[in-house]
Image (cartoon, rainbow, N blue to C red; front, top):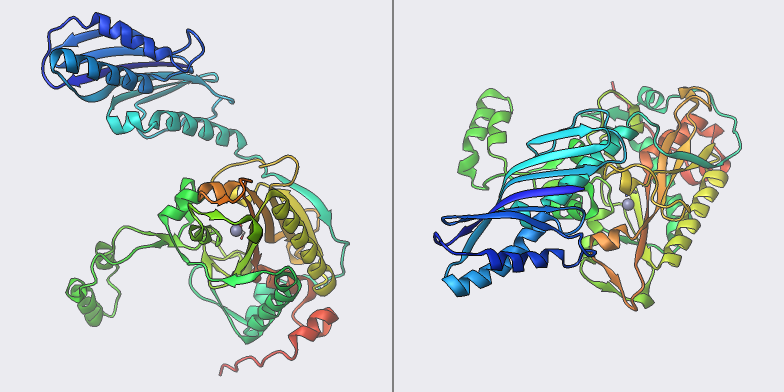
Length: 500
Ligand code: SER
Ligand code: ZN
C-alpha cells in the first residue's frame, strides 16, 4: 500500500516565517502508533503566502489523511503562539493511492469521488483531487478502498452459484400430479391476480393459510413460548443503515414518500385535474412528493430492533422470544409471472429470538426440530434443508458463509414442486428459512447484555404463500387426498363466490 497526499493548510493570514524546526518536530508525530520507521513521512513542504503546502507519504500505517491532522494540530498551537496566526482549513489537493487486491478485476468499475482508477494485475491505483475536510476527516478514503475491494470480489463471485449445501432431505413422497398451484387456484376462483406481484386470496386459500398459521402457533410459537408483537411496516433509513440493508437493496425497495405539504391548497391542482380528466395526474403528484423516508417492510425483523437500541437487556430475562404477523412485506421483484411463489407483496410470520450464544443456538435447533415435525407429520411434504449464504449477508450484497461451523448462518427450507420438473434438475422452492444471525443485530443496534456476555439473535420467516404453494403443488387442491392431520384442522372448506 502506498499513499501520497498533497495537502494545503490555509492560514488565517499570509505569513513569512522559518517553519523548518516546527515542521521537523511535528513530523516526528507521524510515526506514533506505527511500528518503528513505518509511519507517515513528511516528504516536503512550502510556505506560500497563506498556504502551507505539504506532501505526505505513507504505507499501511498512519495514513496521510490522518497524518495531516496531526501536523495541523501541532502547528496550529505553535504558529498560533509564535506568529498569532491560525489554521483555517485543510484541503487535499491530490491524493494518490495504490493497494493490492485479492482478485484480478474482470471489468472496469467506477467509484464516486475517484478521478482516475487503474488496475495493473492485482494492483489498484486511484487518484483523488480537491478533497474537503468532510472527506478527509470522515475516513472516506478507507471506505473507498473497501468498496473497490468488495466490487472486485463481487466480480469474482458473479456467475458462480450461491452457496447451497443440502444438509438433510425427507424421503421421496408420492404426489398428486404435476400441479401448478397458482393456475389451479385461479381456475377455481380461489385467488385473483391484482397489481404487480400481488394476489387477492379468497376464503378457501385464506382458510388453508390460516390453518397453517394455527399449526405454527400450536407446534412452534406456543410450545416454545413466543409472544406476539407488532413491528412497523414502514421502515425508515436509520433502521436500514444499522441493519446493513442500506448497502444494497435500493433496486428492490418499495419507497415511501410523504407529501411535501398537507395543505389542501397545495394539492388543489391535482384534485381538479382528476375531477376533470378522470385520470390520475401522476407527474403533478410526483412534483408534490417529498424525499422517501424509507420503504415498506423488506426483511420484517430489522424494524423491531429500535425497541432495544442503545440499551442493555437483562441476562435473567433472556431469551427474548417474540413473533410478528402484523402485515405484509414488499419487494420489487424481477418482472414476469411467477405465480404466488414469487410476489411483490407477501405475508410472513417473523419469529425472533435474542439471548446468549448458547440460548440462540439452542432455540435455532429447537425451531428446526419443530419444523421437521410439522412438515413431516402434519403436512407430509417432500422437502429438504440447505445451509446457504445467510440472509443478512445476502441482503447486504455479500457472498459466502458467516461461519464454517454451521452455527451462525441460515438454513433454507425447500420444497419439491413436481410441476417444475425432475427432483434433480428443477428448482425447489425456498418456502422459509431459520437463521442464527450471530452478533449482527445486537452490534448494529448497539444492544448489550447485563453481565457482559455478548448478545446473539436469530430469526425465522415463515412464508405463508409459499407454504400454500408447496402444499398444493404436492397434494393437489382436493382435500380428499390431503394428509389426515391437516384435513382435520382445515374442517369444511368455505364456499367460493359464484360469479355470474
Ligand atoms: N428476516 C429474515 C429474512 O428476511 C427472515 O424472515 O429472510
Ligand atoms: Zn428476520
